[in-house]
Image (tube, chains in turn brown, purple):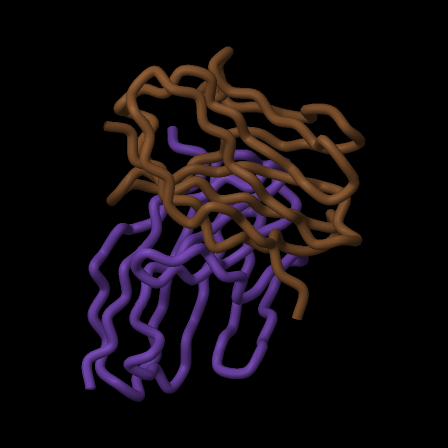
Length: 112
Length: 107
C-alpha cells in the first residue's frame, strides 16, 4: 500500500537553529499538508499546499515557517529559528482530494 | 466555539460491546467527515470517511452523519482490546481535528 515517508524520525536541535523536515508524499497525490501535535495535545493544522503554492495556512504557520516542493517528489517544512515551544511531532500528509488524508509516521522534533 | 468537538474520554468499554464515539462540528458548510485512529506515539490512521447523511458501514465500524444536527459518530461493534486507541474526528475543508477520544477496551 502506498505510504507517505518522513525523515528524520527524530530530530534534536538547539534553540535558534534552523531545521528542515522532509516528506515524500504518495506519488499520485496532489495535495500536501503539514500538521503538528504537541505532546498530549490535539493534532493541529499548519499548512496545505497545492499546485506549487500554499493554499491555506493556520495562525500557527507564521514567518518562521516555510514549505517547499523542491522537486517532483519531496515536500519540506523549514523552521527558521526554532523555539522550545516548537517541540512536537510533525506529520506530513497527502491526499488526492476525494478521500481522506494519508499521514506519514511523523518527525519528532525536540528543541533544547 | 471549537470547530470540531469531541468528548476526550477516556471511554471504557467491555470487550465485545459496542463503542460509540461522538463528534460535533461548527461549520455548517462542511462536506467531508473522517474518523482516524491514533495509537500512542503513532500517526493518525484513516478508518472511515463519510459524505452523505445516514450510515456507512465497513466491517465492525459504522459512521453516522447528521448534517442538520452537525453531528457525526463512529460505532465499533464487537470491540476488541486492539481497538484501544485515541479516535480523532476530522472535518474538511482543511482537515480540522477534534481533540480525540481515548477509548479503552477492557478484556
